[in-house]
Length: 354
Image (tube, rainbow, N blue to C red; front, side):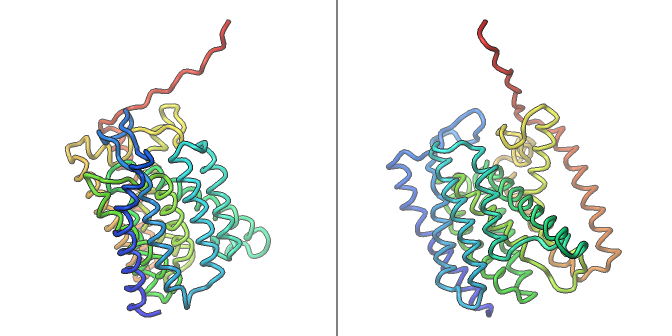
């Protein structure tokens, strides 16, 4: 697949997402599908949901029109898992589904679709050839898909944040894949990039529409899939896993921060929404909503750029980079945990009537 094809994939997804968002916004308003303001929200007026439909349709249209030359079985697996999570997310947006269904049922099943199509982690199988390695990689695939999908689901808490971070990550996945001749990854990445940017036009602060959990889970699943597939040439095992981790460093860091912070306060990380994310803390520091989101974009671009250069690093340099990143991430968690944010209160357990 040539660069021209990736450009076509990107353009189709961009145009479709950009054009479909407006009528979908009107549809959401007509049927009352809006996200109302609340103590754990940053918007002050009801905002239409269902923007994820435009992202989904833009991605699928671009993929179906340019699917030639890519593994069809894997495309089917990706679309099956992504469609399942989009539907579950939209049902959750409408209050028709318990929120734990998406975490403990939807996301693991979507991961199984990937595994069935031949897309899975290949980490332990290189260390332990045979059944043990396969089983461990099977489990790692499910953990990776659930973790990354959930991280994007909870990242959708500020105008333009989730769509923008997904666009940045998709751009770096696409560039890495094109540098290494990975046709499926470059196609998926270009389609995700176009669909995210088209929607971002209407979602950046002040947002005129939200993607909803259907859109956030859809993007998270695609990011997890790209992370499983991208493998740059010249990067020794197991350091090649550093590339997707760096490209997805911002959502991974944000999820780690809120998990540590909430666990310290006796809260369950994925069931206790609040204004304690990285962007919230940066905003309270004086950056404002736009400044905080742009700072997150910059962080994603820096980490993605480092990821592209990993294949050119020596083994010693790579380990040094890993050490610096780990120390920097821990220091950032410590600093951010000390910044002002709205702390959720652990609700007391209900007592039975005497």
